[in-house]
Image (cartoon, rainbow, N blue to C red; front, side, top):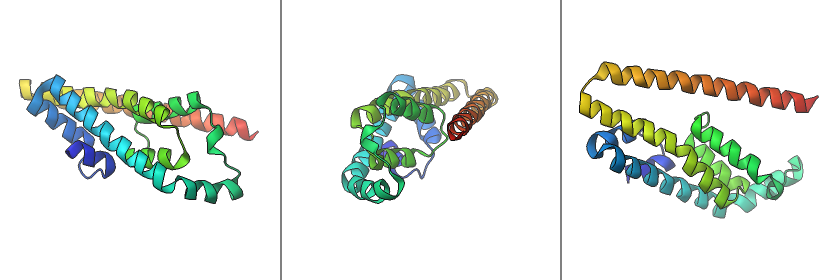
Length: 171
């Protein structure tokens, strides 16, 4: 239930919950709990946003900004959502609500979210399980530090790519 709530209102960071699942339940059960419950919360808030706010948002944005969300390229949307799930640049609730409000199809949203959430569920649950088995906080923090460095490099890379792409389209 905590993972479900965290996907909607992230009071407790996902890393802490998934690490605790790894400590308490081990790698396999902890991963399944972390991933499936977070997916359930993600889909819940997406569907809530999609079916309660999409017509209003489309009506407000379509006329002044000439936006048409129904004609977006599915492959591009899938890859974009996958990248922002794997490299967490945008907070999860913003992704979930924004995808629902912008009219992203359920299949694309669910599949990109499911795939994009797997690496983090594995990493955090495995770190929790490793810490529980080894009781070695130094190694656990070193691994976590290496992961954070990779995340920062990935986020920086994709931000530069997005800026380059945006700037080249402006010209």
